[in-house]
Length: 176
Image (tube, helix red, strand yellow):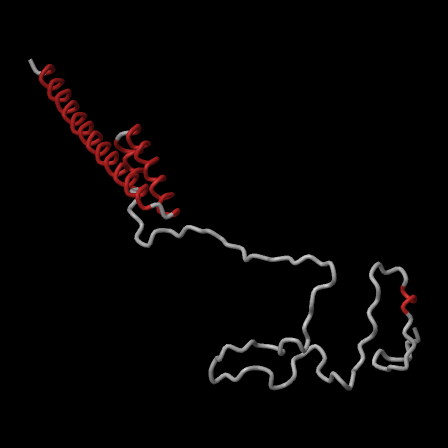
């Protein structure tokens, strides 16, 4: 192809075999045609007015630039993709996570671990949007936390009483 001639020049020698290494056939160069001054675009004024919608289609009128099926081409129907997601609860239930960690470390380790597991399950149920499971797990976490706190306080009080008794008895044995 002669580089001195432009693509818009209809008298230019356009040679299809010039680039034979391409796998797809070349398209002819872009030419302005007098019969289609707005080629590829709808004619001016074909868009509906913005004053109100009356059921007309946007774009070019049907049939003017209509594209049909090629002979023997099957019809392909594409369905929209549907994404199913769960949303977190609007009012999530308390998961007692901090309370569970405190009771696990400071009060009663076994019951604190059980309470921590229920707290994690409550948080997961809240995030997944499972209201009934969140209610059940939240209630069980609270019960185990209260029980662990009660056992921890009872053991602490018994420890104080034991230390007091030991100190008093040690003081009584030293004096004759």
